[in-house]
Length: 166
Image (cartoon, rainbow, N blue to C red; front, side):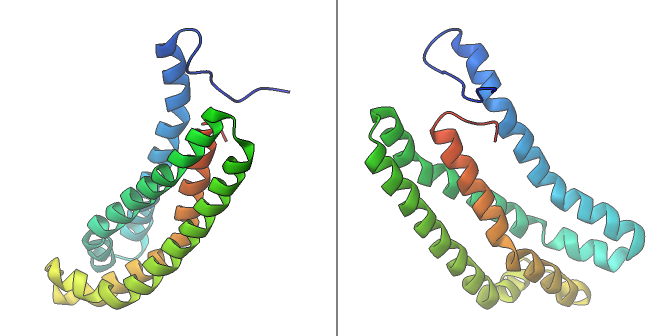
């Protein structure tokens, strides 16, 4: 069986760091490509207004991605410390606590987004002719924001124990 952990303490640190960072880099590119693919499909099939609506939501989408990555990495800090101390009981508790906090954050974002997306689009000076379509698009994205947060939480927890490949 292949061991997917990188030992960042022993051996060539630069090589280990590059090997550890590559999957993280690639996963971040794929998260960014989601919006790019949306843009390509909409631009080719739905027209200029729909394409402008997606463009108007780009800043909100990037904010959500950054927040998801930050939450995933932030919640994994305690897990990394427990793993480093080899404290398996506290490690299990930190993972469970991270999941509970993550679920709370997901639900909060879904509720808050329903309340503030339209005013946020108005604050961003979204043109009147695309604001409804922009709202529809970003509402759909935030409806499934939980998937992005769960992925980033799981990825952060795996990185906390030295596994950036899964």
